[in-house]
Image 1 (cartoon, rainbow, N blue to C red):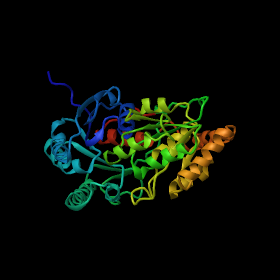
Image 2: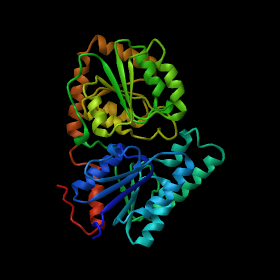
Image 3: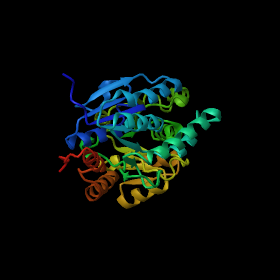
Image 4: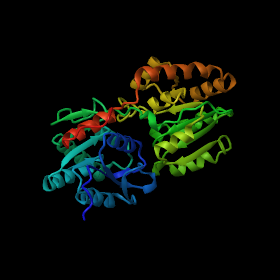
Length: 366
């Protein structure tokens, strides 16, 4: 007897199954009473609990192209959800043949993001931009087009749904601070995301250690290894690699501060990094570069300090380790802001309700 047809299949040619947004989407779909399967990269054990997870090894660009072409055809789900631009064309084609619904999740401005990628140059860059342009146009015709922010295209779509990257409070692990000063960063690690600026800041604050939780960009690995061997930071910066959200926040539990050192690139200028919300929701005082939207949240919440670079960040860290009582005010402000702005019900629950509606089901989300 054939297995029941799953409600939603999330397919990705480029995301690790430990990716936080995949976990948050999956958790919301399951809260809505929908069955889910996930196909992506990495270790299946890093995928969300309670769903069928299929993984493949990453490989190069050619291998990714094959995955993008094949993955949509391997699912019998009633709803096919994509989270990568290069999967969209084949997902639309597969859905028309298999008579299933298509949901396209566009959680970044991919055209601007390419300007931040060293590999997106020359012919490869031209090809990537063509794919992004075509995928964005096709995404507009999906049954539901999900964007992570108002500024992200397509601005006109058959059914456009804004699902902000807000925290899922159930995945976080707030707790009292450790005895010794410790900073944390959770997310992709690359120069444009402040990787080396964070290390330099801690180098200038000898009392502090730093936990870096996330994958390191291939282009920055050798330079990072050489930097971490330098005596000013040796033994004080720990690389944890990519972790599922629950494990990442268990590692972060007890830290004194969360770091958000994004540089001002076209991709990040109007972006709102989820980790800033998550730090505040975990009661972590934040050190942040003064990009427009980060500045707005820091000033509104009172939960952190804006810094212009690693030298200024090191000054703040030294002050905090010398006068740890200062952090109490930031923790209290973060808690008050979280109580006022965030709730257990997330934007992902709205997405899940919309998907349930596509299937003609009543959502079980309260």
